Length: 160
Image 1 (cartoon, helix red, strand yellow):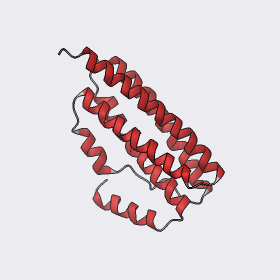
Image 2 (cartoon, one colour):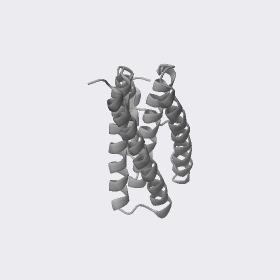
Image 3 (cartoon, helix red, strand yellow):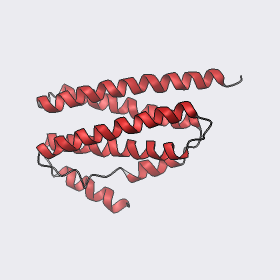
């Protein structure tokens, strides 16, 4: 993937109806989050068993969410196959090396995504989309709590 693909995707999204646009944007962000987590999963130190197990569960959950979004997009006559992760966000995440910094990046993404779902729900989307956003919002809020807990534990384990 390169910058041209990102630009092409942005142009395609701008041509969609609002609900199609919302679903497509969310799929793109989910795929970005998934790509980042898969990278971290492959490059996490073996000694970090707790985060590795959590990342395995997160990757599995994100894949299921991508599948749910893809199915719903098809119902709204949008092909999901051409919706890719945001390359520059994935590339930037690859340079984040420490466990705490990676968790902080994932925390920020989950907090931002939670706010996005709240905003999308406030405009009263169709019932099928509202149901999905509600489920995804609950999952993101749970992720925020899990990450905050891991960060607190990491800070508690760090010598002063």
